[in-house]
Length: 170
Image 1 (cartoon, one colour):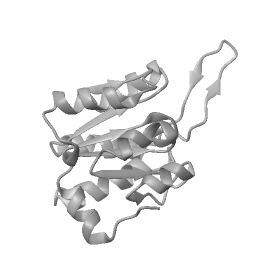
Image 2 (tube, helix red, strand yellow):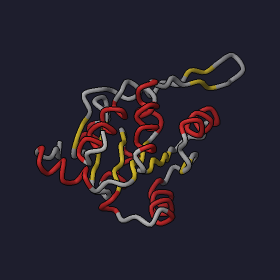
Image 3 (cartoon, helix red, strand yellow):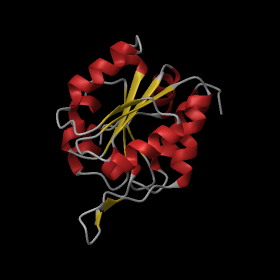
Image 4 (cartoon, one colour):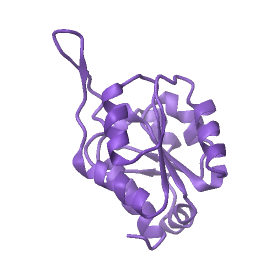
């Protein structure tokens, strides 16, 4: 793991203006539940949702980029107030650059929480690379900080708390 000491971590978190998130394995536990008619359902942790709302209320941005389509997640994210959502995007870097530029931000003002190999290009580019406890070893190695929690179990909330605390917004 490429984890930072506390001082460096807080220093980077102070400048974050947008938290980019993956869905499967970060906002969810990574499991797909397939119904008898092929419908897909996912579970979400309510505290992660509250963390997203807290981030937005503090005047910061949240963006979601996922390699899979999910209308149920698009609806959930919209309910939470997330306006920057890119789904069914296997190559996440172009979507990241587009959203970052739309918000007028630099890489130094962005964090990304990922859990697997498709997240690596973003994790290697942003100022603050975050991961969940049960991430793939390559994502863990790329992370500056790893949550105590697995995907879909409070990791996003813990990351939001880290950023808001560093900025005195908690």
